[in-house]
Image 1 (cartoon, rainbow over the protein chains, first blue to last red):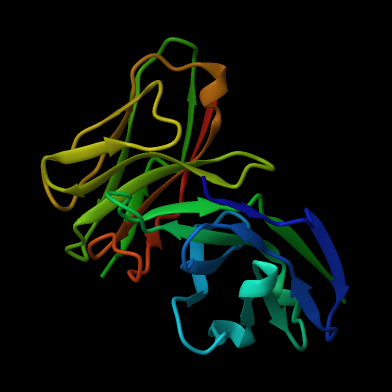
Image 2 (cartoon, rainbow over the protein chains, first blue to last red; image 1 turned 135 degrees about the horizontal axis):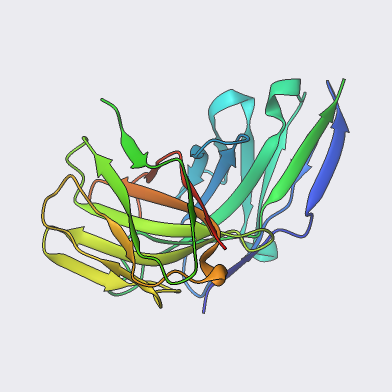
Length: 116
Length: 114
């Protein structure tokens, strides 16, 4: 069965510092990968997604992620964090096999705190 | 477009009570789903629907019922609430639920079962 692991439960960075959130997946075929962000009290918003092609994908709000098949990773990065980036971030993989329409498997989430 | 809407935003139930969480979307999406979010566990799929009249179970379906009589609405019913169902519930929709479709999430319903 597919799975997604986000090793860091909580990360704290200073405003203006760079950020990398880790995501490892387990999936037999080519994965369809996503990063979502959830601000406090809000729903989930899609940051970016990877289906195929260029392994470095750009998303909204200045985020990017790199797919590394050899490491089964899809880490999220941002060169300079803003206070408004404080939120919980979820990595997810799409279960695209058979009749598993739209079934996303999520990681446990990483809470990002930004210090001024 | 309002996107995906959910009501209520908050709800407190007593053990054994029943209730329905409402979800509606105005994007004419065929695929809709319900997830629950628990601390440290991410989101887990409860039920999903690929179109009106078609539903199927997800990862954690026990204690929940769904039906899909229209394209727009996908209510989630708790038949006899239990404390283990205390969670935040999210409804999501996408065009057809294919792997390349973006899923849009509602703002969530925070449910507490006493």
